[in-house]
Amino acid sequence: MAGRKRIISGRQQKPRLVITENFLKELETVILYGHTVFGDIVAKKFQKEVLDRIFSLPLMPHANPKSRFVESTERKVYRNIVYEKYYVVYSVTKTTIRVISIVHQATNPKKLSKIK
Image (cartoon, helix red, strand yellow):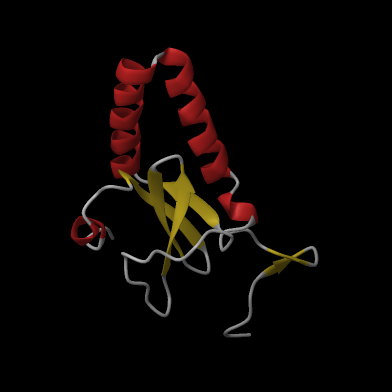
């Protein structure tokens, strides 16, 4: 059975969602900035929208575009959720979705390429 996908009740098993500490720290910084510049309501809405998109990833992990800045491998594909002016960078393997970073779109692409 090597190479076969695990099936549960006739459906493919959803990948496990892992949110890294790095992402949480970066999100906290973005929310604090948003709170300071745009106010509490806008910052909370932004946070809710980003988290809603992240928590829906196990349903369709390949729905977002591949990252142009972080090089994928045969076993791990890097993708971006694009929301407002930010990229949420995550990787997808057969069993795991790992949310790695949130960065402003104006970030230097060389910095983005170092995300792993």
